[in-house]
Length: 240
Image (tube, rainbow, N blue to C red; front, side, top):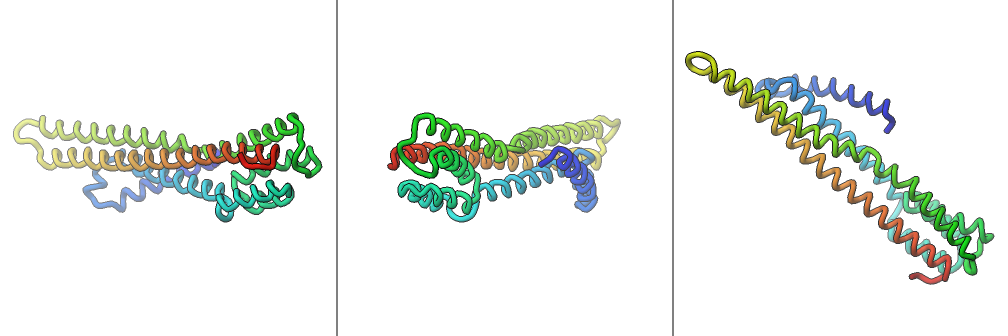
């Protein structure tokens, strides 16, 4: 997601948040201006969650990944590099792109034949795999830090709203004579509503950040494992 697109989305969502606040029950609207930013943080979290889900879904490619790996290994075991490359192109996922780049590098250096490759050829193939992985991985990790940032920001917004609400409550209690019960109740309500919105957003954002980070780590581990197995197949014709 480009920076200018992200800025535009943030501005639009802030306006939508202000509209949403006017549609909420009156007692919720009285939570104050901080509530608008709390709603905005929640909507931004949803945007990043949907965007990351779409990216990771596309990174999975077409069909079953385990089936693709099995078919690709079978082609390599039989010495059919062209079939292995075709399998990578048909699968179209991030893992297939990385493995396909390595096999293409090996194929171009050996004339399409497997076996008997020199150490230099294998080193160049390993380099091609690493470079392809370095290109794919950042795309999967992009914007994850925003989820972590939103989790922290939502917590701070909730705390700010709580503080403002409690200040109003104490102001109502400090008035001469009997405390203003209405103002006291509104202050406490403002504090609790902002706390609830902030904590809800922070909890969900933290969960999503850990979920997506785990998915990316699993992808990187699978790339490393599959790359190692592919190199062994290209070198010996047998799985490690």
